[in-house]
Length: 252
Image 1: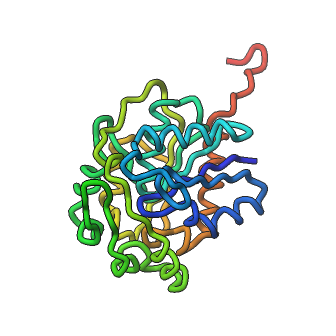
Image 2: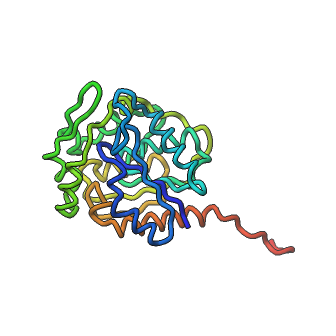
């Protein structure tokens, strides 16, 4: 059994995993889907929300699980889980980025997002001093183009304003060796385009990579496939970390 800690992205909440979490649990895995501060049902004021707060929430949730979990970060969730792993590298069994941001030390979320010149995301945002609002009329095209229409419409109505402070804070440097990492590419993603995804995971040295032919929201577009890929990546982490048996006496 694997413990999965699923981290949502910007404007979203834990609700976005509603189709994936039951599949993972049905296959015997422990699954936790928290709301980051000022997201979903969490009532933290946007002006008090920080990148450090995201990292603390992820770490505290992981500590409450039975064993160090595999953390799955979608979109901005990849940025948040990277900060948590940089601060507490021994707390997690692995990191899986799902069409997510993979930052280098010192990079900001806003900077890495705006560097994707083909993304439709910037034109769908209305940035303010405290929060960034997402134009719900652009949600279908930007986030849910290949997802079922009913799921897309319901998701668009649940989007919340995104706190600005975490997006302006540079990512910290790792305090120790990082957990094993994997990346799931989403080939039809218009929010984080495939070239940007590949640039980020290549420069990070992530070689455990798989693909899905979906939009930015594979948890709605193909939840069973996403669950299967998460399980496969977690199994690869476990296999890589399994100590090899000693050679028989006298062997070369």
